[in-house]
Image 1 (cartoon, rainbow, N blue to C red):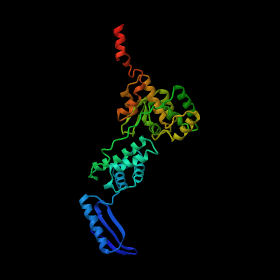
Image 2: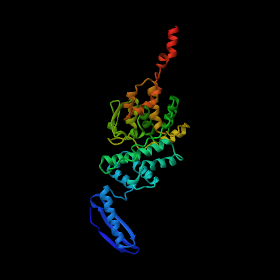
Image 3: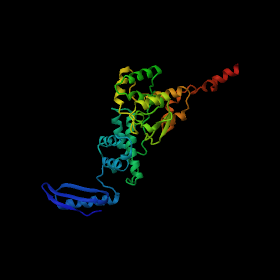
Image 4: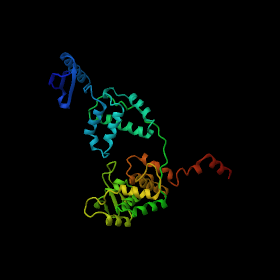
Length: 332
């Protein structure tokens, strides 16, 4: 810890500026003390609290989010994670980090539910909880995670919409009519492989070969290869840019316009409707749920299980294994 650098007489009293811990980059400044002795006491108290807690006593929730971003958040693929997490900290009133508790978040959550869904609040809970978890792993935060024991809100599972085959044809027709020639192949890739729009849009020429597309730098960090029809491979390579760089320009907005022209309405889903449509039809045709997990690149089978009810044999044994079925069998 560094020594006191400066206690000076300012226009509104005594001002303090000193390094609390130079190696950790913690510098304290405060102005307007009525007397020099009051300023010195503040310096002494601040040092004592820091030596006891091992942390800056004035450190706020936003400071933790900044540290998390520097050491971990900057490596994530989600470009909005930091800004969203920082917004949560400020919505909570940016409390002193050492005093923040699960009760504080619980009260915030109660108010937040008046304006948003439980799913959104659960996301915010996970974001903030992850900050503490990561700082604990890094050895930056030495206390318990204040949100560790707080349970997530229960959220009713919603039925995910998907397109019928006729609706798929309509969407592809509008994509073909788009002034952006890359809209159609990217949309077809998503329908043929269940890829996320960004995964398809960011493909390079070397990733499309031998009847397969290879998705890299995916959401969960794992690469995967999915077969595609020969006609689609030909379309991709003919419309894509030459060279080994990206095949396609940005065409998300072009797809949005094409989708709007169809008149279809799937709230909360735009490009992602293609991924859900692939998964839904795959299961309805008798696809294997574990294989679907690998095709979609889900890190957790729970994500894929949302489509299991669409399998033609889903719970079919209820017809033969129920007491009613056994009674009918015995009578016959």
